[in-house]
Image (cartoon, rainbow, N blue to C red; front, side):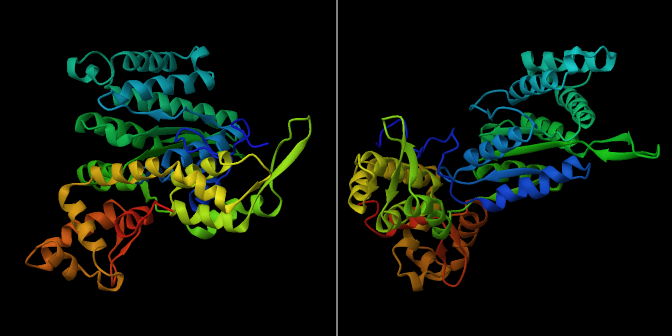
Amino acid sequence: MRDALDNPFNPGSDTVPEVWAGRTEQLSDWRDVVRPRRLAGLPERGRTILGESGLGKSTLVRRIARDAEAAGDWVTPQLRVPSGADPLKLVADAVLKLAAEAGLSASREKRIGAAIARVQAVAVSGVSLTVRGGDGPEPYAALTELLVEVGRAAIARGGVVALIHIDEIQNITDERTLSQLLIALGDALTSEVEVTVPGGARVKRSLPIAVYLTGLPDFEDMAGARKGATFARRFKTTMLAAIDDEELAEALQEFVLDGWQVADGAGGVARVRMEPDAAAAVIDLCRGEPFLFQLAGEHAWYAGGGETITVEQVRGGWRGAQREAVAHVERILDRLPAREHQFLQAMAELPAEDRTLSRIAEGMGLARASDAGPTSQRLDTVRGILNRGRPYTFRHRAIEAYLTSGWPSV
């Protein structure tokens, strides 16, 4: 009954899992704010979704893109930027496909043909066009021009938004390239065109274009600090945190109450249920991490073949997932600069009620609490790993569990 073909849990970052947990605020933001405002011609900033690995950034925007496609919107694929790649070429190719979907490639208008031709050149040469020069606008201006034409086509179609998703945005390490890309996307977001409204009046409206950028927290430094207020005016940044236990419990409620529907192997359907204690064990083990939630569910599913997932199966399955859980947390810690890693170690060694900046600085061997202040600020506002309160607390619960307990052992 329970096999690989009907397992609804999937810890892969490139898929939208069947068992969805949390992120209602971000999903509602798309459904109730971004999309309706863009359709109405009202200005609305792009969205930047940042967070450490395993928090479901890419999966969240893929879910938004899936919902957008279901509504008839024009959606680019997930444009993942490999390290060292030219993002302008990647985005140019995706914009050309949007233009084709919008029917622009068949247009006989000279300005549209010229815009498509220029972006085709960008798709081939990317930012190198800027280096060697040439006729026509620079690559970022050509991208903006064609995005505006896509936006015009979306207005003409009616009820359609063009959604662009760029992933692993922190891999754009060249400041000039990053600047060109952000300017191209930002200019498209802030562009206005004249349209005729009932009664014959001509008014200006924003284009129905939405942009989502996803990546690691480092990107906020790269874009926010270097581009300053311009980036902040054009993109709204959300730093993802762990999912609340209540939201995880809600995601598993179908298993506990009615059971998850699967094929019974005889042409009918059956239901796989989960003991309440088993659901509680999954929630406890994953510590609010979407990746670990899917990992725990996947291994619990494979730990037996019957119609009920027991707490013993959850724990037994998790033993097979422990190495992957440890590697997941250690990858996050290994990415941190030595000073930030040292701060977290010193914080973890203190009793919860004694985790003040002065005690942590003392544990780090620093003479003054103020010497640890910038590090604590980065771990809070940039990394999203801790909260600077009285006392300090861990926001990243899997890191806390790893540093302060025997987790992930059961």
